[in-house]
Length: 346
Ligand code: SF4
Ligand code: SF4
Image (cartoon, rainbow, N blue to C red; front, side):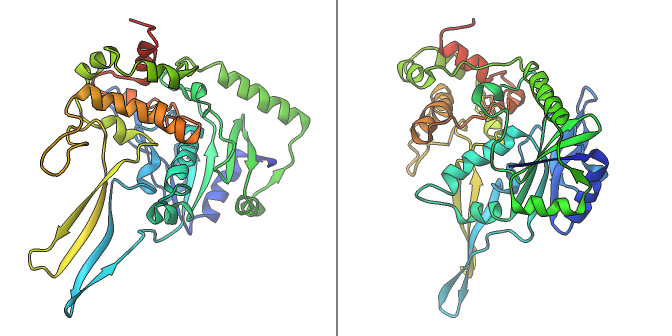
C-alpha cells in the first residue's frame, strides 16, 4: 500500500478527471420528517452534489451492482426458433466516490458468493470488474456496530481510501489505477507527524462506537438456541415487510420470473431481489410454504448471516451497518436480537 497526503481542495480535480465514467456518490435527496438531510447513493454530475461528510445512507449502494430488478435474458421468435439475447447491463464504468468501510466490506463478502463460489454470476461480475472505489472515513453513528463485526476498516476491496485530517486527506492507494489518478493531483509523501495525526484520528473514531454485538462463540450459541422461545418473541413483532433485506448491503437472495408475450413472439427472464422475511419466500409450486411462520423466517435470516455464512466463509455476512434496525418499523435490530439469544437484556 502507498500513502500520500493531499489537500481537500484537490478532490474536485480528481472528480473532474474521472467524469468520463459514471460517478456514484452520496447525494442529498431531501429531508426527513425531523428536517435531517436524506442522503442516498446516486449518479453525481458535479463535485458539489457530493455530501462526503454524510453520516450514513438509508439504502446501501447495492442497486448499482445488484439491481433490485434485472433482465437476465430476453427471447425473440425469429423464423421458427427462439433466439436468446443476454445483456449484462453495464454500459459505462462506475466510480464510487465516498464509500464507507462497511459498504466496501459488504462488497468483499458479496464477491465470495457471487464471484468466487461454484456458480459465479456474470451479471454481478461484469459490474464489479467495471467499477472503482474511492473509500472515505466516517463518523460512527449510534446504530453502527461494524467494529464488533471487524468491518470498521477496509483493508482491501478499494482503489483509494481517504481519511480526513483537518484540511487534508491521508490517502491510502491500493491499485495502479488509483496511483495513476494521482498524476492529476498535487500530493506529497506523509511525514511522521501525518502518521501520528492519522493514528490519533483513528483512535478518536474508535472511541465513538457505542453499539456492540458480542460475537464470541456465536455460531455455537446459535446452534444451541435454534429451538429457543426467544425467536418467537421477535417473530411476533416482525411485520414480514422485507425492509431489512431491502436496505442491507449484503442481502443477495433473489427470485426469477419468466414472462412470455401473449402473441408468443417474445419472452424474458427477470431476476428480482427477494427478502427471506417475506411470507412467500419459501413457497414452492403447489402452494406449500416451508416457512409459513414469521419467527421461523426471521430466525433463518439471522442464521444465514451469523451461522451458515460463517461456516462457509469463516466470517459473518453482516457488516454491522445497522441499516436494518433503522429501517425496521417493529424496532428489531441485530444487537438486541443477538443479545437476547445470548440470554442478555430484557
Ligand atoms: S424490517 Fe423489521 S418488521 Fe420488516 S421484515 Fe425486517 S425484521 Fe421484520
Ligand atoms: S444485517 Fe443489518 S446490520 Fe448487518 S449488514 Fe445487513 S443491514 Fe447491516
